[in-house]
Length: 410
Image (cartoon, rainbow, N blue to C red; front, side, top):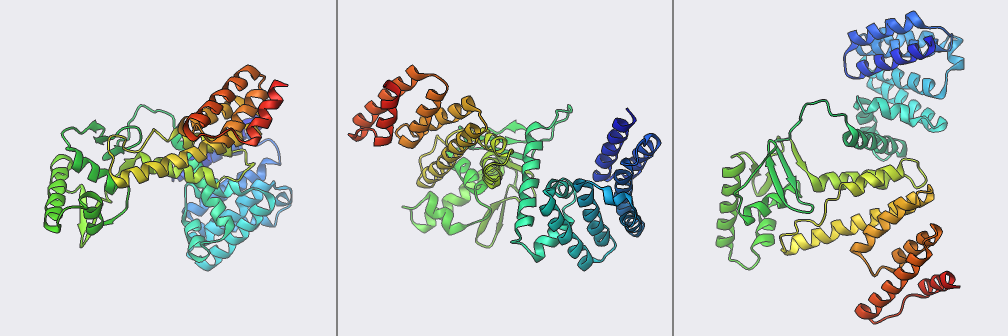
């Protein structure tokens, strides 16, 4: 029981330390010391104590780390504990103002973590304090270990955002824009009505880009109109947005237009693409891949701005749908590899709604149906695909599809 209590107290101390509540962290450390029952807990206690000291008096924390390093206890430290030791040594040097030493120590920490497979320890700490990561990224931006750590941190943040507990409070963005499935505009959580179609479309155009030159906006929205008329129409649309959403909703600088970068803004397309980036960065075979792909798929709400048909909208809609399709197929492959056949089937079914004639997807769908013992359903699906290929393309199913069908009816 004391062992579990000590572990729980240390975890609570660490949680408060990462949040910057060092006094509270010290109180929980004191509780852990009072129930410490085994020598094996000494390293964890000393490391957490050093972590708190590094945050308040770096030199004192570094001295504790040196003492621990020279003790017999450190020889029995786990991979997680030794990685944490390296990390704290780097953070302490940085807090003491010795950046070069911090960088060298952090590189040692990364190499040690990569060797022992304990990178998650670094990612968990760097998720709360990115200073060492930013220091290393500035000197070695292409380092694969640094890239891996960034990927892990993004995954953790994505996961936390998806499953964050509801504490009864609401954190509203200044503006929220949804373009997937239908276009919605909210200001401080309240839907905004009365926006004409053109200003509304301009709002989404700017949201989908960081900064846009005026000439690009003019060509995208009024390609067949003379310049004077283009400029007049743009000013009218901007005025309408400022009138409905606030005079500082759009920031201009020279020829550039952008949404106010000081506003906290949520845009569902950006959320989807960020989730897709995280999922695609998780290596094949990694246990986190299915979850990351599942979250990316869930972030796709439907076709981009379905009520508009401008050229740039159609191009963007097609690109986002193509990415969603790739994620569905990758999720099916990853889920199948983990034995999650029904989840794989569900993703393939969604993929076939988008691309019903894709023979590789249809083949994978048939194979899983057969593996699940749903032979009759697989045969029926084959005949449906065969008819669609004949009606729409005037072709027969591929040799692979025909061969697999033959194996079904033998």
